[in-house]
Length: 424
Image (tube, rainbow, N blue to C red; front, top):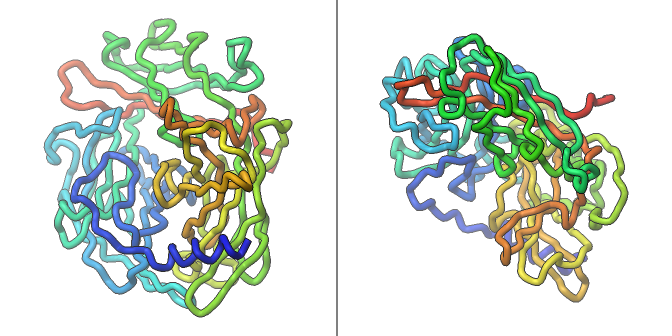
């Protein structure tokens, strides 16, 4: 195993810090390889979804690390977006009460870590940047006050509550999928006049805050006075998938959950996980997970944010390639469920084994394996993880409304629910 491990680790330690191409994408994305661990959540609960109520005391906590250390001149702005994450094309005067950009001035240097880095933090809204309407927003971080030098783009949501969302999760109504899929039915209760719900209102449903699973609802099944019902038999069906795999690196003195070995020297820290197997043909096993989430933790130090180490994590999956033309990836909320070179796995056809190394910050992580079928251009976890209707998942419902004559969509309703009450 070490013959595989150390060449990959060397590759990580010699990363080239290339610049981005100068354009922001309207998605959660990090544009520079020296930027790691971008976090954004409602300040009331760590790693909760980045959703706050308009005109409330709620705030968002945003942070990231720069592995090049030192002090950089990072600036930020926010932009209002449509329900499908495109620019709303309205003036910042329409959605901001104050300035439209500011510099990030809250930063701290790492301490007692093998790899030095600088930790940056930001709270929104603040005295400088204050959104004044509900909707989807994109936080843009850039260097030296130059919007053409992107560093991070991060989605967040501000809810102008005008619609109450009541939802439930059941088995799929399609007989052949009842053991594998979960269906979301929901009702929107509103006091505002909605003249044409088929045109002016839409609801987006996603699973485990993974935008790749989003399903858009534009036609309610039933329209009643002050109530819209969405329970069509063939919509909002989601694969149940499986409980997430996990590992625990809160301590580097002891081997946590799913950790096989820890390698430390004066220049790097590397962690080898136990080898995983395919769960596609196994029976469902109920286990606790965080629905794809992750938490930065360091029980060996006093400050999780600045004393947690950066580690090379070696993943190994013993499974044959599901199809002849495809690629395997490790995904979770830690990388926004995206497929890129950092989390792509190499494949040894002789051993029928996938492996790869990802640099992550010390903590607790959920993860799963996904297969990109290049022939059909589809991404699925089922080839490695299986799918079961019993799996506990969280679902998010976002409701958008464009008033007649309005130039933008407002996020007027939101709910977050799970299909099972946790026993922990």
